[in-house]
Each structure stands twice: as structure tokens, then as C-alpha cells.
Length: 441
Ligand SMILES: [Zn+2]
Figure 1 (tube, rainbow, N blue to C red):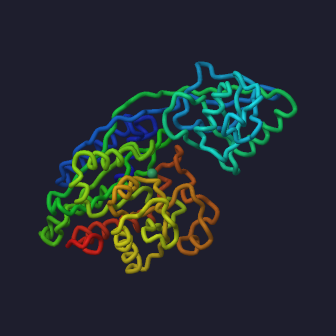
Figure 2 (cartoon, rainbow, N blue to C red):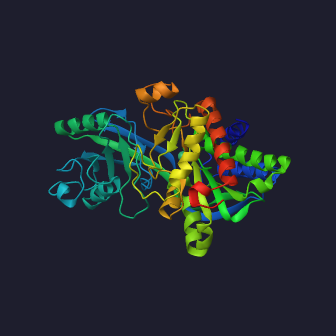
Figure 3 (cartoon, rainbow, N blue to C red):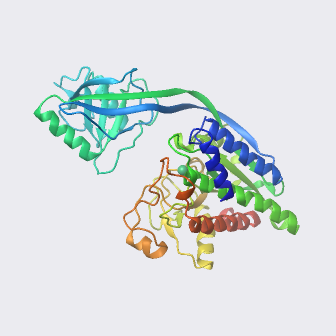
């Protein structure tokens, strides 16, 4: 909690966030490095370039036939709008999802704002097709009642400024277009430029470099909030484990009982597309493939204090969720370190999908076993989960996910405590032996 308090203070002092490429990230990193040095580590920075994006001003307004503002979320990688915004009539494709040229055939879209339904193809394709048809911007409406907060997936020259709205807003605007012209103004001012950011890597001075246990959490927040649960929680938990690990092993003089090196990573730019962890693994693949093979297993912690929490363990054995990627052998044994612990302390737990939505992705696609813990993000709590963990059925695990409200009050201390203990247990267990994971002691 002391680490999290610092993260919140540093976000507050730096524009309300700790996002990659910002002063808030630099300040957070400096704090983590200082704590690591005090605990006897020699942290290093691994720099990489990325495309920084920040929305500085945005609004979506219906100008006529009535005047009102519309809730919206500009898509990541959307180009900005010209100064003053785009004011134009809405236009609807012949096929509502607007996924190909045929959907726009015969539609006079030049200079207008495309109103497109979610589905069938990616948001990027919808934006590209709207541009190809001559539209000046695109508004995509959701297929559910939730706000639509999407991404175009990466930078490209052939997008129009693109934003997302709810299904209800979309259908109401669609109905209005049937009665006559609907005029909108879409303002989107953005900073978009190449910046540098970095991962922090620190490893125990003891243990064999030939059999390394790797432990990671992303240190960056989104630009839209302080990121105290996502992922101050995982970052703080592994920082405390790192501190205690070096202290414990020194005090008790039992270095020889922990033969494996433990390497901690605080990843940069996870929120922009898992960039830091991907850079780390790709760099090893390209320049030091033997070092990648020496990583026995990777433990990932991305949100371990969600207010409406589950105690989730990445489902390596796919007993509940089929993983969309091949899960390397050794992951099952890694998962079992956590689940055995929870059984031992009589703590209920559930499987959480190996979805590829966090920093373990680059490891598993390159054959490194992985598992980890997760207390939930934008999914909703089921009745079964409430029976195990309490909380609110039908409410998201973290109602403040990626918002300015992801602050210290968004942390469930019980969840943080349970997970911090489990992380400490798993790290000590695997530092002592990875026999079950890779056959090595
Ligand atoms: Zn996260």
C-alpha cells in the first residue's frame, strides 16, 4: 500500500497519469529503481521507441436538427481532426457495418461523417472503407449497451478520424437520419509522435543465470488515469516481493537453498499493445536466443487488487478456457504452484483465460512457460464467483478500469494481500526449484 500511495502521489503531481512516455512514468520508474537499489539490486533500463498518442481535447456534438453533446471514445491510432473539428452531415452505408467498397456503393459520402455499426470486420477496416468512400470521419456504434472504447490496432495513413458510441446513441442517430439531415461536429485534438520509454529489469545477485525465474508486471498506466489497480497493484506487489526476497535470503543466509536466479521486470508501454515485454522477448530472440531458453518460467501480474475481485489463476491447463495460443509445456506446472498454494491456505480461486491480453503473450509465443494471477478488469462477476469471493453479481470486476477513478480507493486490500502472499510463495518455491516446470532443480 505504501508503494501504491507513492504511485498515486506521482500520478497526481504529473497530470493525473503514469503513462508511457510521460513525466508520471519517469517519476514512477525512479521510485521503483530507488527502492530496488535500497534492497541490494542493480536495476537497468531497457529503452525502446514507440508511438505516443494523447487526446488533448475532444467532443462529439449533434448540431441539428437538435443541439446536444454525445458521449464518445475516440479510437486509439485514430488521426486527429483538423483544428476546430469536422462539421458535416451524417451518412450511413448501404450495408450498416460498412466493411467493404460494396457497402458504400452508390452512397454519396464525400465530406460527410460516416455512421457505421460494429461487427463483421475490424474498426480499422470500417475507418478505411469510410475514407475510401470519401467520408471525413467515422462514428462506430456498439452492438451492446456499453460504451465503445476501441482501437484501430496500429498507425496507418488511410484512416479518417474515428470514434465509438453506444448502441443506443447509434440507433437514435440512425433513426434521425431517416427523417432528414443530421449535422454533427467532431473535435479531436491529439499529440501523436515518436517517443522513448523503457522497461526496468532487476535480478537477484544470487542464483544461477542458467535457470532463471522471471516475474513481471507492467508499470505504465493509460493516459486517462493514474492506473493504481491497472497496474500499480501488480507493480507494487512484485516490488515488495523483490525487496523481501533479497532481505529474507540475506538474513537467513540460505542463498544455497535458492539455486535459481529471480529476474524482475517492470514493463513499459503495455497499455499501447504489450510493447515493453514484446521488445524484451524479441530482443532476446534476435540477439541472445540462448538466454531466452534459460528462462524457466514467467509469472505475470496485471491487476491484483480489483475492487469487485476474483482470485484468478491463468488457466494454463485449459481446464476451463481453451487458450487462443499454444501454451508451452511447463505452464501447467507453473499454474499448479499457485493453485497448490491456494488449496493449502484454503483460499478459493478460479481459472482466468490465457487470453493474450497481457505481457505473458510474447513469452508463450516464444516457448517460455507462463502463468500468473488476475483479479479481473472489464468482465462481469457471476453468481458462482460471488459465492466464492463476495462482491456484486453483474458488476464489472473493476468498474474504474482505465478511468481517472482508478486511484487508491479502487484497491481491494484483501485481494492485494491474498495475491501478494501467493506471489511471494510462488517466487520462493520456483527460486528453490523448477523441477516440475522444466525438470531442473
Ligand atoms: Zn494492465
